[in-house]
Amino acid sequence: MNNAAHALFQPFRLGNLELPTRVVMAPMTRSFSPGGVPNAGVVEYYRRRAAAGVGLIVTEGTTINHKAANGYPNVPRFYGEDALAGWKQVVDAVHAAGGKIVPQLWHVGNVRKLGTEPDASVPGYGPMEKLKDGQVVVHGMTQADIDEVVAAYAQAARDAQAIGMDGVELHGAHGYLIDQFFWEGSNQRSDGYGGSLANRSRFAIEVIKAVRAAVGPDFPIIFRFSQWKQQDYTARLVQTPEELAAFLKPLSDAGVDIFHCSTRRFWEPEFEGSDLNLAGWTRQLTGKPTITVGSVGLDGEFLQFMVKTDKVAKPASLENLLERLNRQEFDLVAVGRALLVDADWALKVREGREQDILPFSREALMSLD
Image (cartoon, rainbow, N blue to C red; front, side):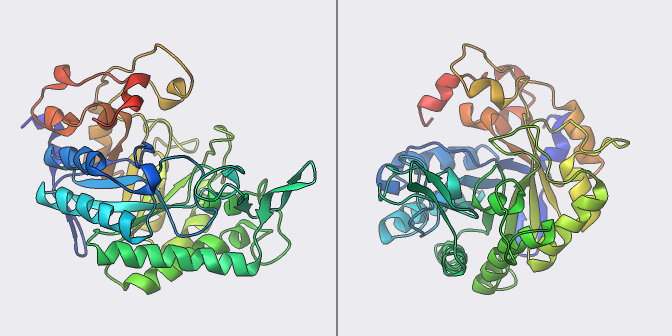
């Protein structure tokens, strides 16, 4: 084994969750599930990465059973016998290859546009009503809507447990529904879900508590959050470690086992006066294990690839990452595009074959290799 990378390939244990390595596959929307059903190509896509040493796979976002949960064509869903049977095949294949897997449970909220599958007539749902030319383009959620969505998250978690998943991840980041409640800009409600950040966190806390009640005490709940949104990469939910602590404690107390701290570049300090990144601060403030993420293994961050470009992100040194992991700044490392383009990324790192790692370009998004 490549001694420098030793820390990445140590086992991790949390309760009943035992991972063979610290390498996590980050959730990445791939849109290769027509009708919302993961097919044989999706099964093989995840299996190959588990076989090459990814300890934990977090699936691409998979939608819960609510009519407005989906925002994009061909993304998988996590309800219905056909889709759950497809996910069961994914689970079995990943387990047979020696890996562990959790679904990322997803509701896009107000990002959804009229005309989107499965029912084109359903608008986005969000904290606030939005009209355009007299037509409701975002339905402001009532208490009944909130209760329905919370129940849908709980049911998805129950189904995940039933088909053998190793936990669940709740997508609370990047400007989707849970995150929309966190932000003052998208949540100006005057009821108990609006106002202070503590109130704006209430929806997330209800989801976490409902999921915990559905799966019992020993089934891992991962919560993904970010300081930024897709709509504003410079946005900050909290400005200081004290504010971060006040934000995270209720989520932790509600039942989160692991925090997945989404940043664009893992090496950037979160607050002035400390080298700690968001995962480092979160671990220190909550005492819970954390996953770091953000341009791991590549020299170009993902924003460059959101537009048509000929740019290529080449493999980058892991030295800084490994130093931080060895210092126990965080516990697990999520790898996104580097793993998307190269299923054998973890194996090549483990064997010291970094020179063989494939570079990332937009072309990689066009196929499911």
